Image (cartoon, rainbow, N blue to C red; front, side, top):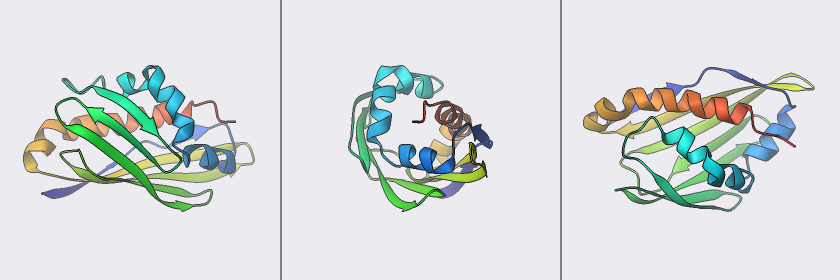
Length: 149
């Protein structure tokens, strides 16, 4: 097993960091978007992977991954208006910690960057490493255009 780090490009969100933090730090806010086709857009680059049965509460979300079973991710740390840390907790062939970092630009804009620390076997790294790099940027793009309110 090796620990790999993937970082997204920095994205600009046209909303202040408090609004962005409050929205992203509650997984229930993401349910409607994920269940309306967003999951397919995020996973389309990974052949043979399909995510179904997505459910969430404020701190966690669960979903089935084709051929792997039930997976869960959980928010493990919130540093108000700066950082949200998420960890995997089963069902995946790799374990990971995922950070959402927020930096205020001014009272109406926030910079966001995603960092993924994944522990995986060499075989999974060879098969999915480049896809994880693409996926982290695609997820950052998606999160940057959500209708924060």
